[in-house]
Length: 223
Image (cartoon, rainbow, N blue to C red; front, side):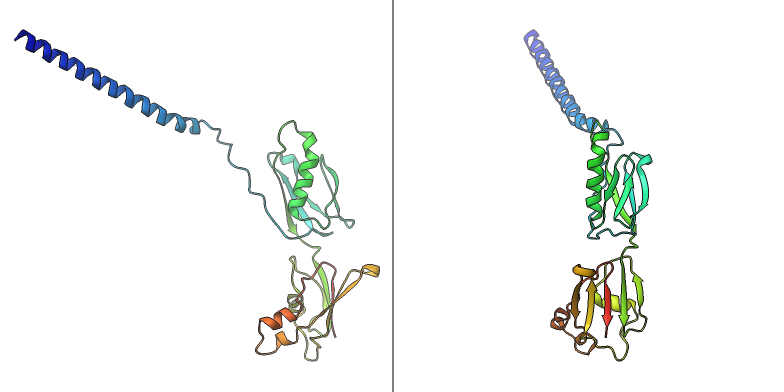
């Protein structure tokens, strides 16, 4: 009888030890599972990812209005107009030639000039074209509304003719000429859009039309 009681007590003690061990393992596992979450939660609230760099195919022209913003530096936020010589002046950076550059190119230029002003990483820089006033071209000749146009975006020659109200009744649409540049650098491009204005236009007609993209300062002549 006495031996039976001792055996029962021993079994109880073993069971208790096993339960405590399991509880200890569970607690350790829970602590390990919570540790990464606590570490993640301990990250500063302002460690959010920086803005995604923008990508633009627009090339800056004199007369364009740019907005330049250096993140975290309100004193370095400016709206600037590109001067006739194609340059801008920016605090701590100085004079920059931006004509012909894309906005992301100017972002890199500003960041490079600011690097010597900071011991650590240079703040994120964004550049956007608020008013692309430099995108100006002329349409002359046999169109309904000849004149100078400012679209604020790149257009092809067909869209440019649309800005001028389209060709008039007697226009020679296979003799349209686009003049680019001046003096020794002047170029002339022949455009044939007659087939596009006829019924049954197909892809081959569009390819043969030579619908070039209009550049700032182009002059389109419709004979």
